[in-house]
Length: 226
Image (cartoon, rainbow, N blue to C red):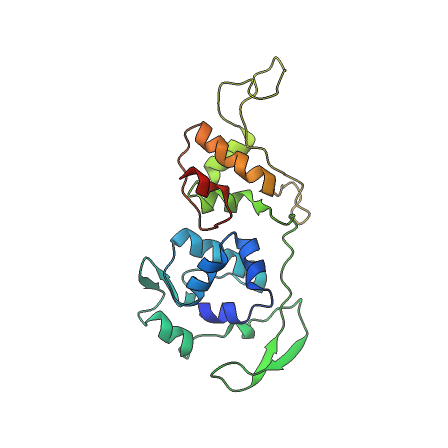
């Protein structure tokens, strides 16, 4: 199935502010993407991951039309504005996605379409506190590979005995984070950074000379490092 980026925005049952909080992408950038402006690939990938969580389907650059990366439309030769207004016959509106956990239905009048049945969607609970972000997403937003950042979380860097440690066993410098058990997958952990842990993570990269990029979120501490 193919989907249209503008329809993903238009059928959301959460506010743009909430979408910004979940994705770490600023309101201004989200509006720009919704209106057909180009964005970084990492930003688009982050947005599609959040949309996938909200709608319960796997949304990628291959099955979503109306995306422009570095001035080039992805997934179609049509201009993004045309895709958003006149989807092709092979394009499925996001409202038609079957969601087994949301049986309630309602009737709405979509723009430019005949009246039809639409389903309501319940956003998925990420299970992390407000202002927190999954460690994997934090790394990807700053162009640091997840494998590298995972080592920073679990193995650390440096010669040892860093910080407040008084143990005789060498202790490497690590990124502080939260890692509770994953309630859905036994033996796995959900690793995330709270709002207070995100700035120290950036300082860790700077302290050890790890290259990282400025992300799209205007509230992120990374903007103070450039």
